[in-house]
Image (cartoon, rainbow, N blue to C red):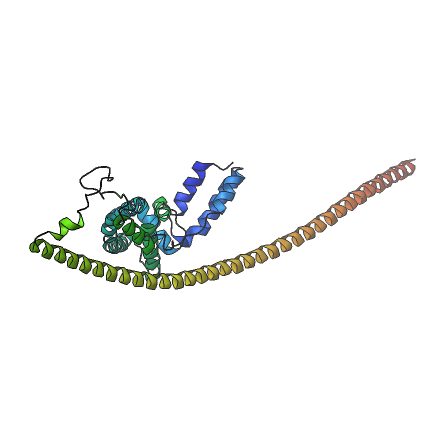
Length: 326
């Protein structure tokens, strides 16, 4: 079973360092886990993916609690609540805050990274922008950003024009929404309907007032329709650009992965060649050792035989010397 504390510590460290050093440090942590006989932890650490630059920027911002990013994540939570509650007025109010807050986060993040000695790139900042918009559109995406362990940019989320239109339709159709009722807390009490005959007897001044209200309502409706149309067109353009960016990012990731595979295969072949050379050298040295041991054994046998010959010769010399003395 994987040690959660060990994995959390490894993840916190890896997602805080420059992606250029991610793979090397991950390899070191895997080796340490294996040395500690913790294979599940080693496997879990090995499965952690290297983040893109944009994901790393946001991971650092989360760890350093960048003020504007904290505010954006709070706004994301408020938007999700308003959408769940189908509060059209609240949705419209909060949505208006999105663009300026996105720009503020990008500006603050660039300045913050500069204080760390990190130069941002346009492509990575576009990843950040994409992820911020996803976080503002989807609660799960916002939670992923807040975790500080992103590995790639997140895509545009679930908030659509249909959601806003549905909320507006529910509100205009008399469905109970937060804040829909002003005079009664339950929102169930309807205003009394004035009979047609009573309305016909109203004064001319009142008719003028009603016509003015109808004109104002029509103007507001036309303005809302125009805003919604522009919003749909802007979102369509953005989503098209986002798809193109995602495809380019996928191709870039694939190219990087292929390069990693090529480098790994080359390193493996080099290691295998060195292993074969070492094994051949071991065999050579083993043969030389065996030959030397055989030579030593033969020399020992020769020395023993020579000793016997020497002793025999010495005995004969002694015998001869005794004969000469006699």
